[in-house]
Image (cartoon, rainbow over the protein chains, first blue to last red):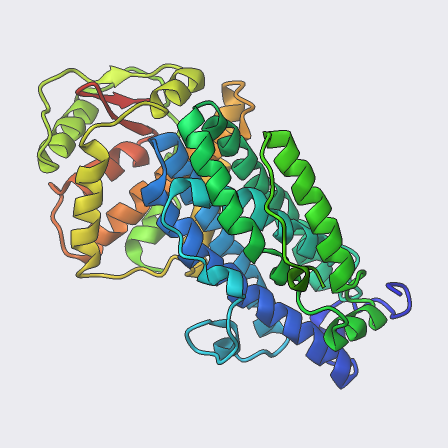
Length: 239
Length: 166
């Protein structure tokens, strides 16, 4: 379906597109702008205080700045295509950030689990925009992807450190058990009308269900790589 | 963009890593430690490689980090900076670039350490901005710390009672 809609190469061309195309792109840009900012605020920035040593603290600080930077990129694109600034700021819009940002972060192990398994979900979401028909959004996704991968690697790297000690390994497994179940909802509702329109317009490639299933498979591979298990998910989280 | 942030764009970030310390830098280190209420009597430890810095950074830091955090919180009660400010993001990207150049110059290919260096400089620049906006004078420890970073250093922390610097 991605080739069905012609490429929209510039923000000027965007203004000439159909209302449904513009609205669809706006929804995605607003969602990314809000959620990148919320994630930096509630997970990455507070995690600096939880990190065990300066190496981890300053690396977390850099990751937080990259997340804030992603917000700025989506925010800037949003302004270029005429989105009101208030719609892209969690404190000024009625649109709620994703539920996963309600997770109460209290430990370093939880943060590592969020990077390893939460940011893996972010990779899949960005992957789905890598062939988006709106090229400024496609290119933004491509430019943030290396950092998204690094953030997942951060979780895997520090996860391996936690595995070296039986007590920290047990705390990490417990954190994964708490974090993982909140992630699948990140992919949105199954049989989503929004998603169907996104695919019809060449904005996204896959259904929410396909992405969620792929995510669970990749999360299981990541957990196996770490020697951890993932908790069983209730059926309502998978469909 | 505020003046401190504008000034930060032109500093010598990471340009003198591993070089011998000068008298002015030793004075900045002593004033920084004293300003945080820490013992300044021990001679600083000079790290001479990225590998050595990386090992030090994984060590226990005692009260040093918490002393900085307490001062940060005190300043944040008076002034606020938006970490999503586009100018601030631009400065952070510049810091990451400067760290990458310095690492490449020394043959260090660890992208993690490059980001750690960028994060440290970001924290130092943030502390400096807080201190300046709060009206602190030149003797403030965050301003003395920033002077070391601006001159191309990386202050690694206090380990076993000695300040380590790269």
